[in-house]
Image 1 (cartoon, rainbow, N blue to C red):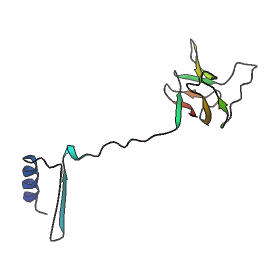
Image 2 (image 1 turned 180 degrees about the horizontal axis):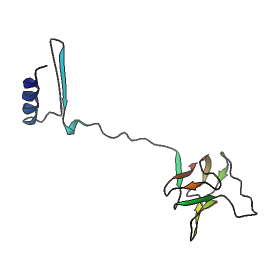
Image 3 (image 1 turned 90 degrees about the vertical axis):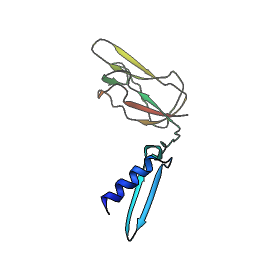
Image 4 (image 1 turned 45 degrees about the vertical axis):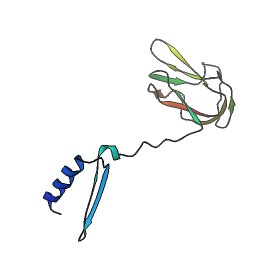
Length: 124
């Protein structure tokens, strides 16, 4: 395709309110889109609520000598303790933000975690 034609088309589009333009002739085709033609972000809904790590540190499920067993599918209530993240100076509690079923557990006992990393997913 002739670059002069492409330049003419793009210059012409700047003078219009078109968001996109398609042209085809003799097997050649061109499609031009302006920023206004960019697709809208897709919105999705999910029934899972993530429970993020509150700090950078080591994930702990229970105190030494105590047993806290969490299983996927387990029903939990808002405020139930899910563990904590241990940093050099503090233990950051992790509690369930909503009541529901514990669907996914990504947290591993003694594993390092980063701030904001989803440790659990709860289905309302």
